[in-house]
Length: 274
Image 1 (cartoon, rainbow, N blue to C red):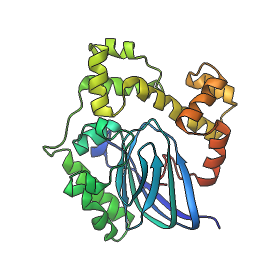
Image 2 (image 1 turned 90 degrees about the horizontal axis):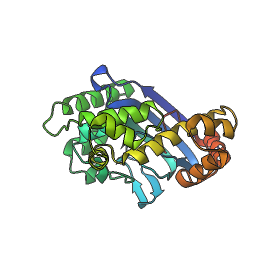
Image 3 (image 1 turned 60 degrees about the horizontal axis):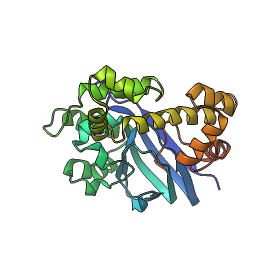
Image 4 (image 1 turned 135 degrees about the vertical axis):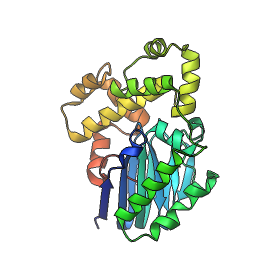
């Protein structure tokens, strides 16, 4: 039986530009288990569930969670649920999550801590508060208010301008900007850039570039934009076999396998909650 799904995307207010990329309200129901593969992307997610758990499996083991934070990752995650899923996803930039959460991002890399585990009562209270509101507009407005106020909170951290520059260059070049080039542009040593970047983004610059390049490749593959050789050339891979190796390493399947799974289980871009 097909999954019955409702997805309601929304843009955050201008005050959160550069921090929050998108809101997504979701409600799904599947009588049989619904499994999805989440490949690495250059963003983070705050999942606020309304009483329904989802199973996540990856390098961190297996976790059953209702509400959690997913930091930037360079490994795929397998998710599964059965029955109903109802909640809200907030897609954030890594620097946005660093600013709003006030935690070193390296402590969240490749992990999915629940909101109760973060020691943050404000975030832990969001699921019950949002579930009690009458609809998506009210929920989106409440989250916007909470996050905008956190920008003024003493817990908010301001990313280094050098780290922001390196992140923007990597994002703007599809992950192809070199670490030596970034160090020269920031005026920092490569070691200092690596340390500060990893603390505020979650991965080192080279690993972040790899994820951003792969994210672009995934988008082209799922869209059917040319042959695999074309995708490899556009994204800066040495050849098609190099692209296939990256899919196996980062997504756990071949490009063809990934596209097939995506066509069956995809949620609206960016990646959904499960």
